[in-house]
Image (cartoon, helix red, strand yellow):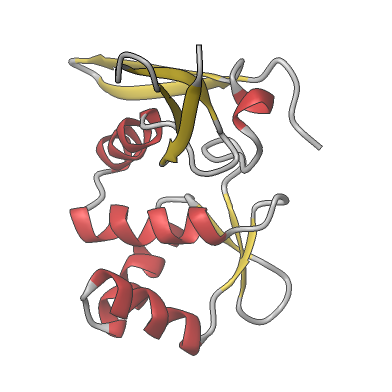
Length: 154
């Protein structure tokens, strides 16, 4: 059977050249994270009472952080995020202050450096974090969560 392959986002689709049928034959996790990440950001937002714009800014920060969870946030970077999200640079700065107040972002030792809380975010290949589990409990007393790590990626 002859096949033609093409990549769509993180999915490899093969097309049977004889009958024209298309099949999902693989995934390429190096291209982008699986869709579950969106739900995770929403959960972080609910757990910490974040606004939609705070969550969107956080998503940009997490996407751009280094593997050691550090990110350098300069005026130029804030402007870039603001343009990407079609918001004002002041809104990005307000989101950063809110994320710091909620202990999601921690001020680093160098000017403009921050650490994104490693109990909430890990930047690694999907195969390295597939066994990380987040437990969320919602009850009348409030919300609480815990994160289990089999092992942290290096």
